[in-house]
Amino acid sequence: MTTAVAVAALLTGCGPEDEDAAAEARPAGDPAVSATSTPTPPTPEPTRTPTPTPTRTPTPTKATPTPAPPSPPPAPTTLSMYASTAGGRMVLKRGGEAQEFTVSVRNGNTRAYPHLRVALQMEMLFGEGPAAEANGLVLERHDPATGTWRPATDLRVANDVFPHYLYPDGTPLALDAARTDRYRLRALPEGPVGSTPLLIRLVDTSVPETAPDAQAVPRRTSLPVTVVA
Image 1 (tube, rainbow, N blue to C red):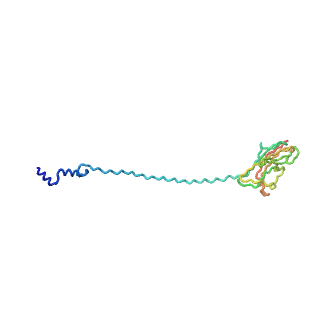
Image 2 (cartoon, rainbow, N blue to C red):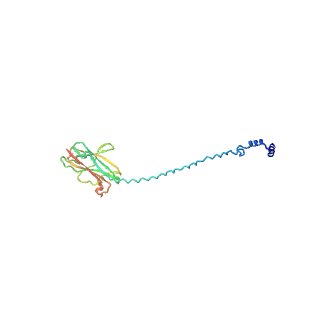
Image 3 (cartoon, rainbow, N blue to C red):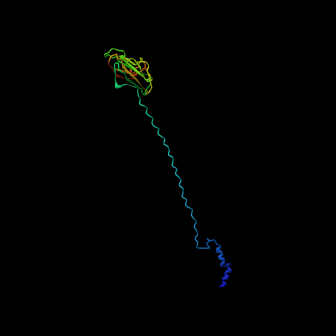
């Protein structure tokens, strides 16, 4: 038995020591060292979460504003005139205080006037009392430049109609312009009494002599006047 082991050792050229040395020289993962060792699986790469592509919000288009419709042209307006006084009528006492009245003129937007004149006229009084020039009345007009009252020659006392083309030239009145004239009327101590209207006419002195009355006198009004003793 001993002889057989020796022969086998000689045939293989190694002994138990050589097997131990060979085992130490092998790597630990060598399958020859351990047939039962389990290989370590490779670590899987982390799954990449795809980055979502940002969605571009479209810039809102600015809406073109709708132009406002043009304003309609203003309604046509025409020339107007009115007279006013305290109480709506003038009552003058002979030798008493004067009473003020105003004449307001407002132009429209249809045409300008180069020459307009306010004309004042009364018929003659035939009541009791002595006859007097201009019915024994004095007309004054307020001067806004000086703030004083000045004698006015605008009052005509007659029973006829004075032609428009014989009046002195008036003053211009532009489109939409307005003006107000202040007057006052006083009764002198001597003169007749009675009632008669003060006729106020707005005369266009620029129209031709042959112009009809409606064109020559575009506006007219009146104020009642009573003169008492």
